[in-house]
Image 1 (cartoon, helix red, strand yellow):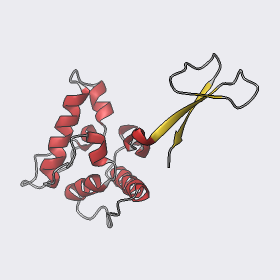
Image 2 (tube, rainbow, N blue to C red):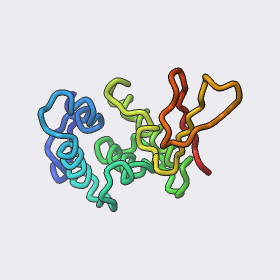
Image 3 (cartoon, rainbow, N blue to C red):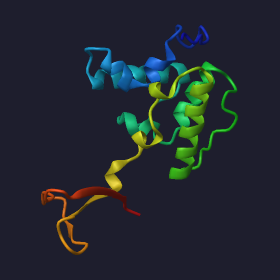
Length: 156
């Protein structure tokens, strides 16, 4: 599906290939870093806004730039963008953006999950040993025993 954008913004683009870098990467011999850079350049050209971060994920994690992008493609599709600097506001923006993508005809398989943009640097991985009788936890540096499970917990 081709979405027409204003002549002053960019030529017609296939929205799905930019929304889902993962899908695009599977169909291309170009590396992930190049795909991210191409998507970043396109988003900046359409929105006329700078990413503000060299990290692709962190620049999009609050959803504001994505909401601005889709409003440039289809003005008014998102009525309100939550600009509060909180994780909940970012999650709200990402969900609004993904719903707007659905309104434009994109399928769930073409989109990312909001958790894909979460900052993983504040998470701790706890490995619980299921061969132990108690709730013994092992530090990350220790390999889990056979049959153990791995859980990721959010650090406040």
